[in-house]
Length: 424
Image (cartoon, rainbow, N blue to C red; front, top):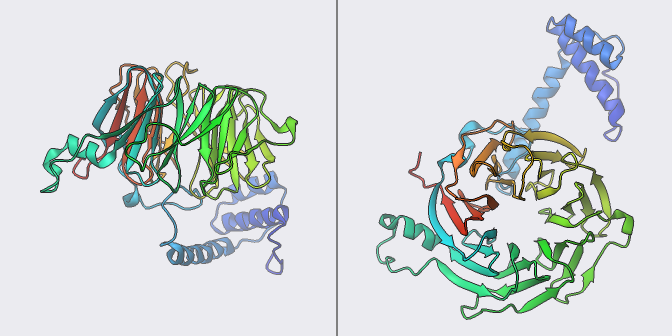
């Protein structure tokens, strides 16, 4: 074993070496029974007792630790199952958040979004209206005693109300770099609003489709937007020229409407989910489908998708009330978050999201209107949190950089939740 030269690309050979190291370590530690069982399972050659695996592990962990320190300033916090986080570094649990502000529409509230810097939120409704709210003003309204002297006269939290759709606003997303809000609607349009201009009431750019639009996702540069509709073919639009691109290979498309789409942070990939129950992963450059996870939720429709910051994993939720964390390099679910659906299959679509540090997964329970949350790494279910809505929660989104999230419900209301520093 000592003289073997490792070929990083030969995974089969490397696994054989790993198993032999494990068997040698078990024999060295006096665990001959387990060593024999493992040897028979993997059909390994006879191994001598050795603690080489222990020394390799120590040396490897030291190298990773040094590399982690060197890159620490450049990496945002996030989930990586190859590393164990410090318990003291975990963000506050979701059950410690409190309602800081409530806004109402004239009909069911079905869409919401945070801006890329977390300073604004937007809500969309079946009444075809969109509201844009200032986060700082919402916090000031809920805790006037915390307002800095001289800033008591801050305005109303709702800074814009937009009426430019003729049917339900089904999805909202802010541009990743500019002060632009994109809205998708069942009226068959995606509209872009320049929210930097106070007087703006109408969209400055419109993409028109012949099908109700269900979802959208901006490319991380903001130059393209992927759009899912009731039709099975995903559209990708050039934001500047309005040119539309679709995959040239019909067999790669979904077999039913596209319910969710999401670009990875690096834009190397994007993923789609559908009523057909499949999750598809696409190449961000060529637009070709490079992987299909068939019947990812047992054939149930896919409700939401979310990449982790490092691009290694994909979080999915389905109409089966289950949430999975998929390892993209192997296409297998490495974590399942269970216990949300008290009645099994859901009636309505809703989202599973990470908190801002990816320490937790959040998912609204349709039957009880409570918030289910789990430790993202080990799948341990945390304390339930009543969301205070009088109807099903149809959308949830978390701030990208703060302990805050937004819930949108069929009770016409959107609730902004925040975890204050002094809240235990």
